[in-house]
Image 1 (tube, rainbow over the protein chains, first blue to last red):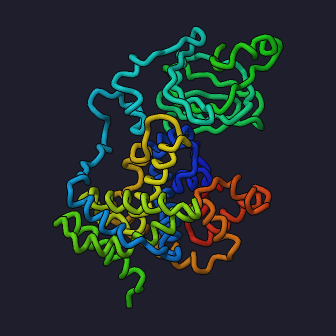
Image 2: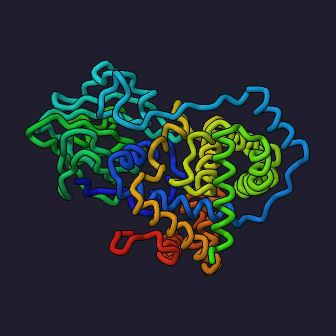
Image 3: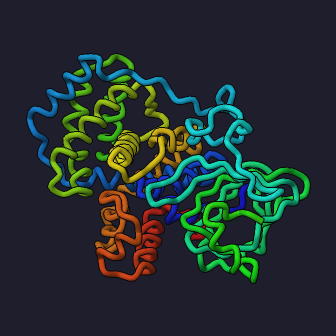
Amino acid sequence: MIHYHPDTDRLMAFAAGTQPLSQAICVSAHLEHCAQCRQLLRRLNHVGSEMISSLPPARVPEQLKAKVMQKIRSGEAAVEQPISTTGSAPGHSPIVPRCLRKLVPGDIDKLRWKRLSPSIRSARLCSDVDGTQVELIRIKPGGKVARHNHTGEEVTLVLKGAFSDESGIYRAGDIIFRDQRDRLHRPIASQDSECICLTAVASPIQLTGWLGRIFNPLIRRSHYAH
Amino acid sequence: MQDPAATHVQLLSGLIEQVGAQRDERAFEQLFEHYAPLLRSYSLAREPGAHLVADELVQEVLVKVWNKAHLYDSAKANANTWIFTLARNCRIDYLRRNGRFAADIDADDLYAGLEDENSDPFEITQQRKAALQVQEGLRQLPNEQAQVLAKVYLEGKTQQEAALELNLPLGTVKSRVRLALQKLEILFRGRQP
C-alpha cells in the first residue's frame, strides 16, 4: 500500500511536461507503482488536450502537408513496435523502473557502486542540466543515513525495502520530497531487509552538529556518508 | 441527443484507427487538416514567432501519428488526449536535444505505459465522462484560472515561472490551479491538494 504520493501540482507538471528531468524520473517511477496517481494523470492529460483543442488554429504553410506526406510515403517513417510495459524486461532487475532501463543495463550489482559508509552505497545514473544528481542508494538493513538538512530539493523514491525518519515509514512506491524547510532529516533503513532508493538531489545537503561543521566542506559529493 | 463535440472526437478517433488498420492516406490527410493548425498554435504558445520550430513539431507529431496509429485503441483513449501526449513528448524531446535536459532518457521512456486507460469498463466510462466535464468546464472557467492553466500546459511554464510573469505570489497561482481543477472535477473528493 502506497502512502506517499506526489502532490497534484507535481503531477500536473508531469502531465504538462514542465518538470526537470531528474524529478520527472522519480515521479514516473512512482506512477509505475501507483494506479491511483495514474488515474489522476490521465485526468490531468484531458486538461492539456482540451487546452490545445480550444487554441485558435494557426495558419499552416502550404508545403508542410506535402512534406509530411512525402515522409510517410518514403518509408522514412517507420511503424513503431509497442514498448513493453508489462513485467520486467529480460535481464533487468525487477526493481529498476521502466524509465531507467536504458541507464541501468541488466543486473544492478554491475553498476559502479561507491561506498559512502559501512552501510550505504550509491551509484550515479545521470545528472540534470541544473546539476541535480540522480542516483540509486542502497542501505544495509538497519543502516543509518547521517542527520542532515537540505539546501535544495531532494526527491526519494523507495524501490525495495523500507526506511523511516522523524515523519514516517516509507515503503516501495512511496515518494518523498524534502527541502530546506524540513529540518533535521535522519533516515534509517528497516532492520529486516536492505533498502534501495532512487534519489534526485538538487544541491548538497548539510550535516548538522559539530562534526558536520568540520565535514560539510568535504561532503559535497558523498552527502549520504555516515 | 449526443453532444456534437463528442461526435467530432469520435470521428477523429475513427480516422486514427483507419490509419492504423489500413495505412489509409485519405484518413491521415483529414487528421493533418484538423491537427496541424492546433499543433502549430501549441508550439507558438511556448515560443511565439518561432515558426520553424512550430513546423518541425507539426511534422514530428504527425509522423508519429502515422507510425503509432496501430497502437491506438479508441475504446481506451480519446483522440485529442492521445495527440496531446504525442505533442507534449515531442516538445520534451525537442527541449532535451537543445540542452535543457541532460541524460539519455526520452519522453517515451518517461511516460511508457503510464497513460493508457486500463481495460476496466467502469474506468473507461469514468474517464470518458471526465473528458467531457473538462471540455464543458474549461469554457466556464474564470479567466484568471484559465490563464494559469494555459501558462503550464501550453506555454510550458513551471508554477514559479507563471507567478513571476503574472506578477503574482506563488500561493495565488497554486490556489487558482486548485480552484480550476476542482471546477473541472479533476480532483477527487478528499484528495489532498
